[in-house]
Length: 288
Length: 274
Image (tube, rainbow over all chains, first blue to last red; front, side, top):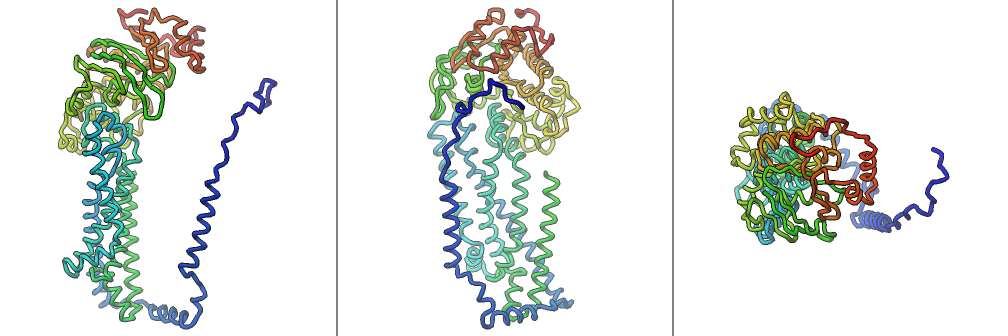
């Protein structure tokens, strides 16, 4: 478009905001931390070709092929595979039971901040809002900062070997993760439907059921299903400390240098994870 | 119904959004609030629907000072005030029936509220409300599949189910096209008239306000600029009200030209001044 003679003189445009140095500082710090970590983490590809390294790898690969597919072995592994699924399902169920209530309490828009609390007294916001909020946040961080492996180790001491300590370990550690992510999902939901319900006299349960849950449901379900998938993998690791399932079998076979068994077990694990992924994909598609 | 004395609201770290608003609204009255954007109309409505606490001043609702209400009393008072917002404050993923029945949440127990999500309680009531806003066939539709105007009607149906004494409509037509705006404003006015409800409406369009409301309150910079019958709202008053707000001044020019975006569709209720 042609500019008419009345076009604004250039000097009347607002000056561009002064350039921030933040991107440069941030970039430099990032680069420095990678270089520093490269050295300290002793990343050195040459060690692959030194000494026995390649030979060991070759031994492992040769041992793994062909994978052990005998009827006996597969029949024997059906139970641990089922056990792995059961551990992951129960663990995730317990994680939801822990994560959902704590996650709701850890949602600031529900407990003490924002439009729902504009008329709440300062002391009410503090005692009934901020204190439970902070406590549940702290609890969630403790639960998830202790690795599930360590939880399993402790629960094995407490309740003995078998799948149960694995279930508890996944339940507790994943409860912490679910609660944290639930609260983050809930906090990013639009507050406007909540405000409307609140203004019409709805109590907190009503606001949650009709305003928050329907908005957040697809994300909450998707993340829970993702955690279920992780739980399958985690149950394999937990088997290493005697918490049952496929993991325990992998650990046994590794210790016996039965790499053909290990490969079969890994394939079973892969099939389980893929199956869970497929199921959760179907559920997510229905909810979208 | 409402009595406001020296209401002032200052948001954290900002200027006063409302600065000494005093106003009385009688039961069953219809009042339109006009004024440039940023004048404090929405803040006023959020104080009136008891979700925002004024920084200073007194708000009396039916003879009781709101500041003295307990949390339970506050909730009960809120059930008597129905709010319709500028943008659709509905939950898109819920079916229309649930969004409409949410008007009952102030009365329902948590168990009832939960049960109704599985099997709607009083779906006939929701259907009747939808019939009154002219779209009974949408009862089971998913709310986010409706157009903006249809969603605004769902919001009105919800307020009908809530059955409050006052309806506060905060720019209910600013996101719908002009012909629909007339329909929605007249729908709200007629329904409030039939059911003897107090109706307070924020309107961006001066033309709609003048045509449909017997009392016009002009708000500028957090203060009441005038509070008059439409016949006494002069061009000069409107020019002062919107001075310095370019878009709104254009609106006034059109009004004076006789170009009426809402056409001849505006018709006042019998008995109200034209």
